[in-house]
Image (cartoon, rainbow, N blue to C red):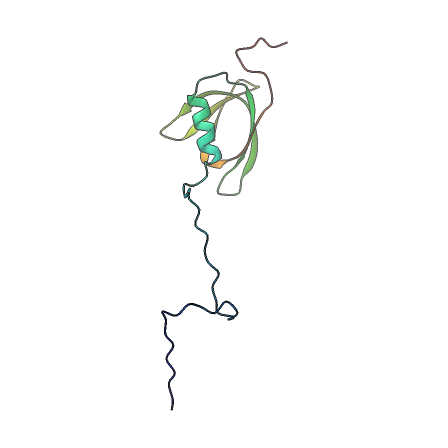
Length: 112
């Protein structure tokens, strides 16, 4: 039986079916900001708190839409407390937010 050894230091033949393409390395390897991080930073920046519609989907598959004004942020629980149109507070976990859309004017502006 004859064994043929190949030199691993030789350059790869680009026509070979086992050739691997050259990898392009990006210079910025930081991960993209998540929606939760953007919402948290936007709340901490101060500014007006407009009425917002949050699309929320829990890991258990329960999905809902919460519309209201963010009253405060519980940083430790990473949760917005949103006051709905009926006056009740609703807990919105930032990790479960799938979308956020401003639906009304900010609370700093008078409502018509």
